[in-house]
Length: 293
Image (cartoon, rainbow, N blue to C red):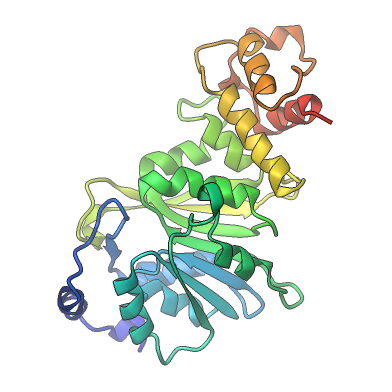
């Protein structure tokens, strides 16, 4: 069954009701219903038969079906056991899908679920990529983005449906009003582009905010190092932006101390500026210069 001839949502609603399911806004359980958007999102990430796609937040499996028609391997992750049951039943006739029941951030200290790490670590065919697609509630968007930056093996690209406000922060350019620690953290590794807004009326139930589709593509000069080193960089960035109104002469010392290092040597003319005026690559260079040996 393609999305073009998918059953009316009322049938899915009745099946969810039979299982005692009520959507949770905290878990981002707002179902995207527009089949053309499912196809469009799948086209944006453009998986091939050599690629592995991890889909976080399978929901009713609408997008999963589109991904399975394109990718060599789809790994569907769903925190709600009742939704996972429905998705598995709906896609029982679809090859190439594996399932993970649990929280995507179910690893130690809210890191990626170990099964997701194992799926990403599996060998790929020549030219294969590791891709992530997700519909993320606001509360977990920041931590999940940090995990994509720190992931080993490296993530090659992602398409994320997130709250518009967060997408704007991630994609903001240096010096923009929305530019901050999250912008630097993500842009140290990925080119970030806000592709389009998605209004509330294409979801059921309707969220109270507008969503946006955010595409991340791994940079040629992406931050490298072990997962632990990249987590240390994220810690450095958090402290650098913790006191946004303070000048770099203060925040650089705090950020270096947070990772047990010494402040880097910086041009005197820059020390009176604030962190939001500094490009991600420069901040990454400062981290390398001050981190402990």
